[in-house]
Length: 476
Image (cartoon, rainbow, N blue to C red; front, top):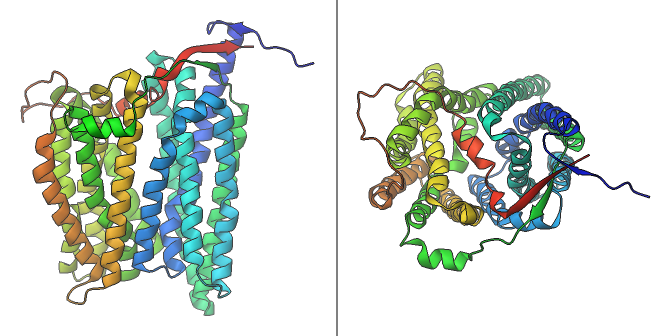
């Protein structure tokens, strides 16, 4: 006979011990999950290129991973109503670990001459991202039941610092492994075979790290949820009323901007690895540098958002994002190989880090200012769907441009130029639709930023599904 668990107060010493233990385990779990991404998802694009994926196929890959997660997240609330959050999280983690087996097999079969392995890879990667999207809101809801509100900033800051460290270390380690195997292959006349062997090895590391995440999730405590009736509104209702509301106009802007950004997104990796011939270490250093600069600028961006508003920050960062492809195009003016690498490592990375950090922070915070808590999960889901559809359209457009294979200039740089032109048009006509929804201070260029608030968006994300929660029950 199964012993029935007793419902108790959150202040119960046994419950507090379970919560504190789970929060420490979650930091370890975050490090494992970040390592899985560092060894795994970070190298999907280079792996596809090693399988001889065309530029058009790279566009399709990004189209799939842009659309599938947004479609899956529409059902995240329904999942929480039917299954425990812990069960959803551990099931998706297990599937993400197991998917590395067929992904590795695509490399083996491609080396043996089996055709169409790139298309199979696209399907498998799409499933990986779909499982990740399924777990994300569920995990945030779970953590919202464990972390006291007054501790959220400190806790998530500590967790994300640890995650970031492991993510960067594993990405760099993966690049060193790949370069090492590539050099061995070059010396023995089997460059492709040893390169694919290197990918197989780091993907094994990714699977092991994801299994470690799965094991740690198993050990964590989950309070039970009592679900209440949702304040539902359909996607059709959202589209009908969207243009008349600040959030609706903002979502239309986000969707349109996602299209023009998506045109170029699949091709940064192609340009660095195939056109410029960078090593995997240089490729990863340039990729990571933008993230590092983003973290450096977060203190400034967080305070700016709080004082002068999310729309002001969004507009400023949007204009910088417009210029980003142009900085990459300008690299053709540099003839020295080392100087090209240093230029891409510093100039576009600083601009992209500042712009992406500020834009993402402003977008996240604006959603919470503009949408009532009772409707927030639906608003977020519909916005994510618009962004996902936009990324899909953009990536498909980029694929078509790559397939045309124009001859009067480098095809990838031509795609960058088209993306920059589209970004400019969306900025000109779209930014005028955005209006602040809360009181803000008048902007002053002399304002000195003093506070560090990088966790604002992360802390607020845990409220994603809170409106469906009638009660959180702790048990022993």
